[in-house]
Image 1: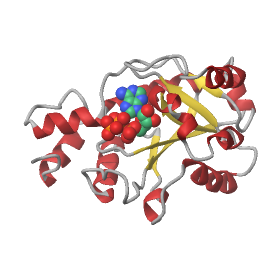
Image 2: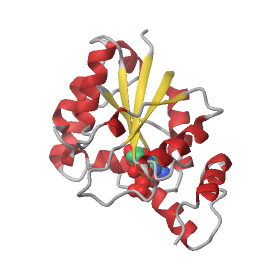
Image 3: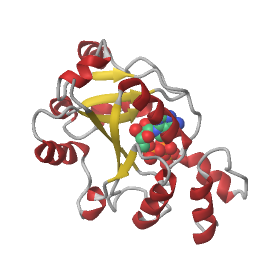
Length: 214
Ligand code: ATP
């Protein structure tokens, strides 16, 4: 059985337990060797994150300091152009070779909007999609076509993720964690505590640099 590596993209403005806890559970269930966090470059015409790219990376570093499962790859921040997931996956696939099993982790909300992703139909030729549950989102796809696509590609057991380099969707049985970065930013702007939503080391950083304040 080959080792399975996974990538996890996000804005991470900021990273929180809704990212960390489901992904750690997923790693335990599927035998993930490593999870590479890929902070997104948000193109100028889109609503910008409140934290700068450097601040988002600094928060990731603090969040994973004691979690050897994780590492950070800033390649999407090093480009001026929008960071299409499919392009990043093509680059990583070229680096790691055609046989390495690779997963790309998303939450249920991202699965539901997958058909809006750039070249979404190429994703499964490059990776497996590993989907974490997220409370408040439908478990069925929005159209019969997308539901059919999901059922046609859904992995039935974990071996399939390790024995093939790409091609399956794994619907993981991960804990439901009802946290969003939006809620954290809102709470901070209202001067409310967030201590139950993200690691203390990240909160200390947010306090130290004065992020998410009016
Ligand atoms: P925002 O509230 O700013 O939109 P977010 O909390 O949704 O942010 P992102 O950085 O946009 O976080 O999410 C990155 C990835 O993590 C996405 O695939 C998303 O589906 C997933 N994700 C975020 N929060 C959760 C959660 N609570 N449970 C499961 N998956 C999550």
